[in-house]
Length: 313
Image (cartoon, rainbow, N blue to C red):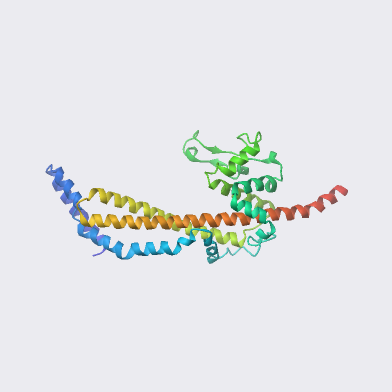
């Protein structure tokens, strides 16, 4: 009997039993029927056995195997993904992401250990060349309607760089931007994305192959993390409902226990993926930030003789 046949046979039977009790005013009978598993005791026992024998052990073993990847040790995984076809060795950058830490080691360290401080430095001294009069919130890269403003005309919040009084205290706004305005840990990451996009646009640079690999890796493991987290929540809800409704059904109670066990394994898998993604992203932001600073220095040196020649002429 396949799943559709099982569902087709069980649903009418459950509805018939409940309807019979309710039509005759026997509420206590209906409650007892539900507590005994709605006649599905054997079916739920079988599901519990399947979870116990096959699915849950696989999920728990998988989590134990990859638990070490919830750390910077996950970095080599990005090389399991191919770079995009349009990328080449440097994509216009003077050095690759993997070579950049040797060129600007201090920048790499500060962006890895204290990302907000590193991104503050890059915006002020690399993107704006020290001229904070040009500062605007996220340099207008994230302008638009967010939260309730998407649905209500006058609702909060709408972001429009240059209209929030940044010119009065740009350093304070920049400090807030890289620490809290992008929702906690996402704030320096948002600032970094802005800096990366601006430098690519201004200098006509492409996507570094390592950067492209990470984007694919992030997409894959991000989907895995989301699926595992959703599965954990759904299983937890099912276990909670079964455990509190079918209190007198042995099969339901077994299924509740196995569902909670599988929910725990899925939740742990999701957390491992999250920690791994965050660790790798922080490390690569440090490397790519040093690449950007080195690129800025090289361009500053190459432009200096041209400016001197213009002044002589």
